[in-house]
Length: 140
Picture (cartoon, rainbow, N blue to C red):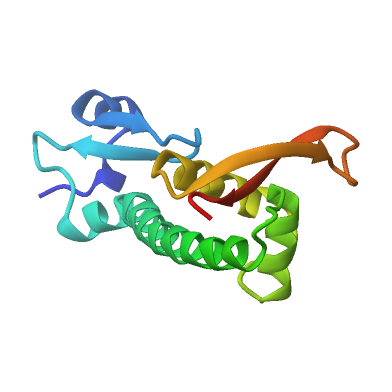
């Protein structure tokens, strides 16, 4: 069996089907119809797929845990909180590394879609000076 490194570039490209990674970085082999790659080379080339999958699974678990903490926080604040305020509390509790609102906003949207929280009003954000939603636990 030939190694892929032994093939000329135009031969390799003709034999392998490549797909660009979502981020536009390194290509990932999705097919090797002539078995030109050794098992080790296939494993090396699939590392980006493996690491993306691992990151995705970890992110799913992190998101679920963060949703639970957000529900706790909103339960403790029945008058409601903005996404930035929730993110600040997440940061104070050591759940997230900064008080960036995007640590809370997507989870609030997911909780809204699940019927767990609702927007109960709006107020001016002290950071942006814009009107933002105030969130509370649904039924509270």
